[in-house]
Length: 433
Image (tube, rainbow, N blue to C red; front, side):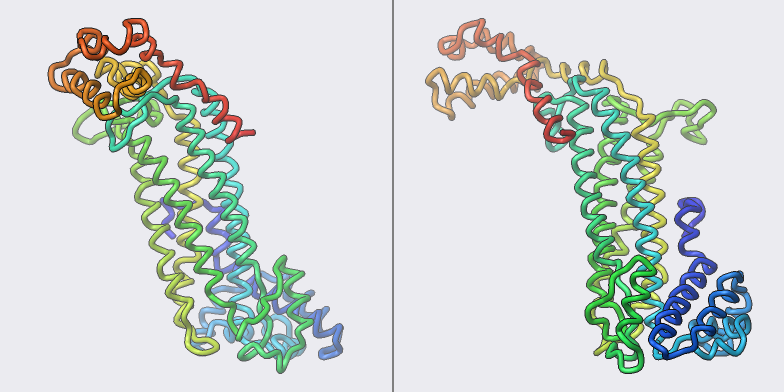
């Protein structure tokens, strides 16, 4: 986790203090269940909560113990015993380290996901607002980076909204997938702990019991979770890349907000660079990179090993912290995005009517020409616009083969921009309801 790309709300979830607090709650809830089953005294369970629940765990002390024991959970339990006293002997009855580690990891992931879902909601709100604001601002749509046909800037943003709404749905499912608890003991057989303990801890921690844990929660769940974060990051990059292209000097249809006092270059005072969206592109690459090791974690030896452990200590915090930052940054970019409809119009008219070529093509086929002949007639006039800076409408009206099939009024009618935007309301209704 790099402070430059982190928000405290998310990093706090992954702090040692937060982790040890969750470890304690797992152990203490398990003690409650064991007390109800008569395995440990009820007074002992109460004491564990009273003494451990009101204490700030000493991270430095736990680290000191771990340097000797070479085992993080044992180090924590030893420190907890220093706090609780004799009743600490009832903690961790029939449990194994993975019960604590895996359940805690999933608690942290669900907490992180709740923040990510809030981030998504903020982004969706911003996209919807700006989409309606620019619903009717006509701009050129591009394929292969080349002028294609007119659309509106609002439709561009509506597409992004629909994409991120799908991402949100995926994230909701990913949260459900990851929200499981394992308190099943060595190799997951419940030999030394009753399954009722797992059910109790799961309910207390806002999780559900893992059907078969084999001592560890199956890592296909985590693979799916981190893959979902990777998909969301790809959608972040898609929108960021669109803005970067639109900010290019020769395009300049939209631009990141440039604050008073902001500097774009150490050498060139005139520069206004798309630094935020370039940053988002890089952050998206990092989030996607965490999906692959999560997939490689699925194949563990037999019932379990710990080859996944070191990976998850890194990708859990890094992926969620980075995506959280990226989503909030993207929301800020959309909120303050500078949009230039005048430049959109100017760019669309740069090649003087070429964007209407398909309408003319279709009209010629409707008038009786073959598609091959229609394409030939339209293309030969279009190439004059590309190569000789001609006006497309003028060239069509001067083409005897074209006017033999279409009247002047019929040709001119094909140059109506409103034709291309007549279904914008339909698109918005589909997206926003």
